[in-house]
Length: 136
Image (tube, rainbow, N blue to C red; front, top):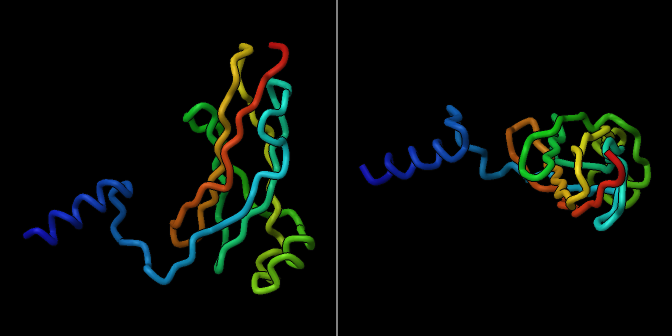
């Protein structure tokens, strides 16, 4: 009974998936390249970086102040990433991602979070930035 209760809690926390993540599945990893934390940016700004995984990155999700803002795919060539991570050279061929993000109105600082999701559902934060927005 205790095992099923624990399993139910895990499933509830994972969005009630019908399967548990594989323990052998590596978590994705990567970075946000542009902008850098502390930057002053326009309301709609380009955000880019790279993400790698032992299998395939299916999407990169972005959140502004904790609210979903959009998703993009890692489809841009990044030969520099392949050189830095030779064990992932094949995956690095198209590990770059880019998206225009609407950071909203007002001049208060924003928090931007990027998360990579692999084809097995594993998710990892790529970075969290604090940004200042200019203009309306």
